[in-house]
Length: 383
View 1 (cartoon, rainbow, N blue to C red):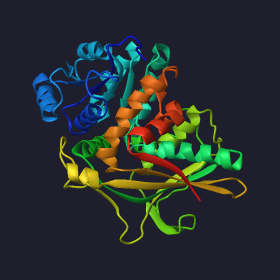
View 2 (view 1 turned 135 degrees about the vertical axis):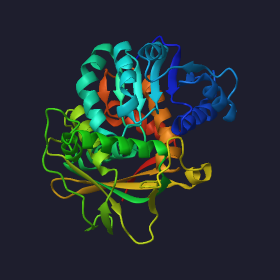
View 3 (view 1 turned 120 degrees about the vertical axis):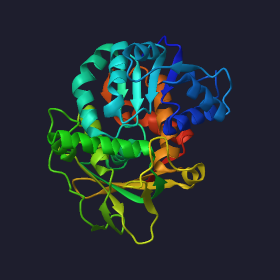
């Protein structure tokens, strides 16, 4: 972290769909010029001014101009912040120069990345530099993958408290969900597919649950690719589209925590397929929204999610916990999670070391507490 910086955080990409939601949340929750010092950043001052006015933010809201392709502008921007929150994706196309600037300056960087191919590249290319400068590079601070990664963390801590030890097996099950994707998410998926077509070896990376734990390859994982009945939740479950991303982050968390949950740890994610259950996650395919587009305010507020995690001990004893969110997962909830993760990092986890991190491994219970207090998430033991 850059301790003497002018701002606690800078929202980079504040004129985009998700960045605008982050700025709106910060303005409503923390005001401008108050306890949390923050600024809006993007490549066009005129667009920043327009968004500031549309969000009814005060005229003194700090605005910072920086182009993702201009290293000098990025370096000047990151020196002004303890943390930069970036929504400028696809990250594999537009994110590297910012990560390089943060790793060099010792400035924290948080994103919403769900692009494992790029995340694996960042770990290899910038982890050492971030450790040296003290910068904490934190990927996947939205629905990819905070509810899942922190859900497993919370399940494991519950198991330790109730059963006396961490457990070697956790199951994530999406019981209900309603929400939509934005054009930015669709663009990230398209960029990843294009990268795989260009370099087929990335396809193997995408299929490997341990792609983000360099030097460690754990046991075979449950495939989660066919409909099956899950007695623990009393429902049929089937494949979940985000499992390929979330499982990698969960295994990276375990590795970053010194394999606290064991080197034989197994984790999978599936979604309930009960007919009529609200498990809608719309927006993919040929009719996907374009960058800058996404769910309406009414759709975001009507959205929600309910995820259950079952921890299974070696002797068969079990714990069950839930993670729930009060807005649509991809945007209404994600924007709050990203903002609060950044505040947690610069306020509650100042002493945590530099490197490329996952949110849960870096902030753990402090982030659980902050998300419950401010971001509309609930973490609860069940049964």
